[in-house]
Length: 465
Image 1 (spheres, rainbow, N blue to C red):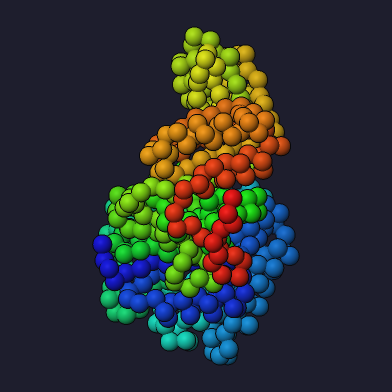
Image 2 (spheres, rainbow, N blue to C red):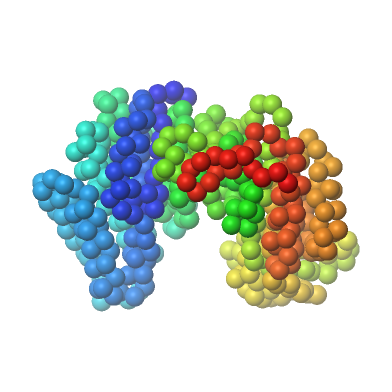
């Protein structure tokens, strides 16, 4: 691990206005040592490109171009820089026009994949022009130029870690050794045949993790529109507090059960690497937020809640064949591209928790596979209770369940997560708020070094229960 390298990723919301990009420059000027930057597309620009591919409306693509042009005119004070960006914008829009056949309504998937990366390409070019003008020598690099090798299916590819690592050692490391800051497009890589392949939802976070691993960074810093992981959703639980540090296991489980800070796949490239992740808000600069580490020294007193407000529960009356039907049901669903949040069996029945949008399709797939005696329960919610303290204090879970029972909150289904640091409950959607507040009061007892982050950045002690 190289103590002198940090990888910093900035999301689209960080670049929604000139002040956000100026703030990126301020942060980079204060971060010591070698660094590489990964950028998303400017906020909403990828959605505009997707809409254009569906509707082929010239007004949509004009809006896409105008947003970038206005942002550049407000950010870049030197006429030569504005002229350079307008030239870049014209070239990229020309390439996009040539890529798309206006007379062909059916856009091939590989063309679509390439087209929706133009937001990242333009954000990198714009930010580099600004950074160079303020004295931070930066090098714009597309994923093609950096050597981000992809494998897998279009729209949900993965990085080839070995080949990407070799490529970055040849192209990114030398730039940093020369005192430059490589600024790399997020979101996508390149397949063996040269086609563009995007990394799916939160693909830029994932790619930043891949780059951090490849350059053996000392830290990956992800700038988001939130300030890190909290003990619960603060819009539901008013006394939720910031988690200063969690483990990879806890982060993965929180993300799986509904915390909207990171996608679970962001963690995978860094598992076992010893490289920590820090989640920050732009207002935090380069300190604060939540630090995510491979393991924690000392007592595992941290606990947190995550939730999904709206899930469906498919229940199969399986009798003595519960185990075999459980395996068959999961196989049927995965073959249709339906991936449940949880699948379990008990007392002769099989329970499948999934997104409500997938409920009807899942029911049809199971029935077509010959699986009978099925019902679906809707208007439910899923709560994940996450933290290493579950391992150290097994009685905590039982106490939480007693609290819910005494509060007349029925639990439709429960089970444990895959890491041993999480347990989940399925409750009626109408009971979600009461359940979260009850559980939060319980898990907050005994937690050490807690703090509540207010909207203006002042850190306060949490209210006494």
